[in-house]
Length: 269
Length: 248
Image 1 (cartoon, rainbow over the protein chains, first blue to last red):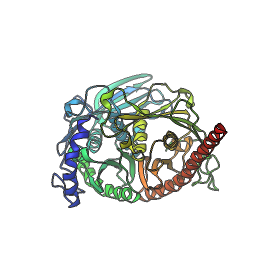
Image 2 (tube, each protein chain N blue to C red):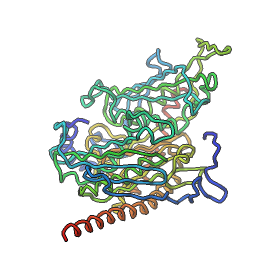
Image 3 (cartoon, chains in turn blue, green):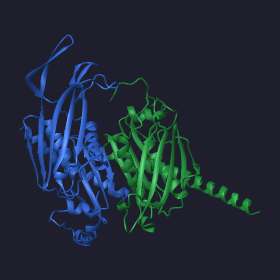
Image 4 (cartoon, rainbow over the protein chains, first blue to last red):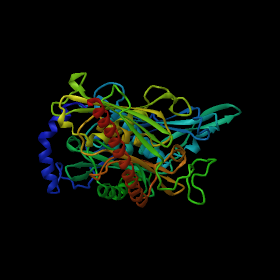
């Protein structure tokens, strides 16, 4: 991250903390309140699935493309899930051009783990010829406007795109594979979502906006699956949490995950 | 869960390597093993062998990365190609890039960075042999290497993973348990301060399992903390002996 990010916040930190001490936030939200969530799906017709997520002013687009490929040697009877996220300079003056750095890699891997641990995409239903040909489901995520909490917005975009994706039917004759025009829904068995908390001073808030991220000491993300179980955790930055703080955050994440999941489920109703 | 040939927990509650669910692997830490580094440590935790070198505080290049009010930490976690059963390419993987980041963030809270403005403290971690839990063993060894380098710290950082094997919570996962178990949760703490500096998880945990798992991790961390302190004391006792000999 660039240095401007390190310098500006000093001036703002006091304002944000003194507001938080009174239980208020700079954008007038409650401490446990998400920003307004809007999800549009099938925004890119060429993709097998796509979703544009707005979380307040944060905007993320995700696209799904299924590609025929070989299975991994340790999972011959499963398709593959590949998640890639990029923080492109288009989305914010603080993102610089260049190959993916640790921020991009962490984001990709947190989204990937959340979906994978929840068993969101049923990889067993993506086998065409066992041990030989399977679907590789690529989920590519691009931040379009960075106003904080890219992890939650990216996970929502990824699962919304996967949930509504349609992949081609195939016909197998011997070793010949024919990709047909007809399509079927990508087999999605669970709708995991993430809930991210920021710790600023001694206060913990949900869904930090960019100004809050500038001054946060640490953050922690909980992935929650449809059963209400934790399916991923990722703490970040150089602040710390106490035992009590993470236990409380985990149960709050479970509560808050319900409404996010509802929004995803409504996409198909 | 994947099909597997091994039973990870036997009827009498023992694990594949004979441990009880709340038992750590045998762990030793050797301090100051590299002459060139300002601080170093070798940790052996079960079959893991990990070597850590700390260089710094030292001048930072390129200079524009330096901060006017404190040191920065750079951290590289890397697995040598022969550390795992199938040769791994020496190029850093996405996993190694992420782990370098979370390990750095786990160590940073312990280091009093404001003592050394405009400098860098470099932490280099080479996993020589991997058997599960390498990120946590790396953190445990790295904080000892930082102390060996004489860098002022608030506390050591100690780490261990807990996981779920056949619905039993187990401490300090080995590779088999990590690969075939139902979840893995690495935790790092500053034990005396009671502050969590790293927390990750994959697999699934109920809220109750999460709480009990974290409690189990904290118990493991307290035992490892004693091993870290003992390793440092032994190092300084032998240094003191050398000094005394040198003088006479």
